[in-house]
Length: 213
Image (cartoon, rainbow, N blue to C red; front, top):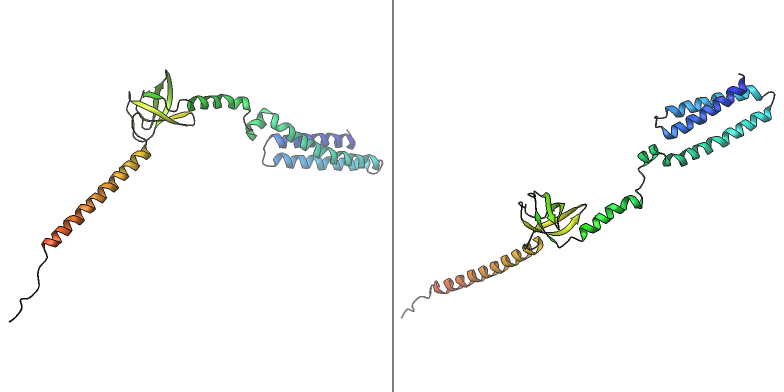
């Protein structure tokens, strides 16, 4: 084999290494090998054609400058469609893949307001039985025991949120408690003020001195 054959062979090797660098992460090792192969190809082409056929040499250089970006872009265009590329790039799921989860979410949202019964204790997660179906659930507020009647009040992911049936929502409980506390506090303060006023009237001391004749 003469220099011309080595030049073409090393060019093909460098292009193959360029594609491998795109598909196989090597920390730059394959890229260095590709540059060495390409440099060797140019040197062999120089010895083969520079003196006798300079037009062929410059045609070779033009071909190299064209092939490298074309192969590089083509490799990146093909890479995301390969199984390895899909695992690395983590492409977004297709509508067909998302449809089952969206349908399940709609079914769970339709259960909001339904009554159910706890199968297992909730601390806070557990299982409930609603319309003959077993569902994962999370208790809102206090922990729940098994065989308790609950109400579905929301959906979180693929899990329903439940609370003890016939119990007011926590926000209402807090507001009512606060209102009762405020009324009691006002009444207590009013009683204390009235008592102080009565005691003050009864405990007044007359400091007037008797008139001297």
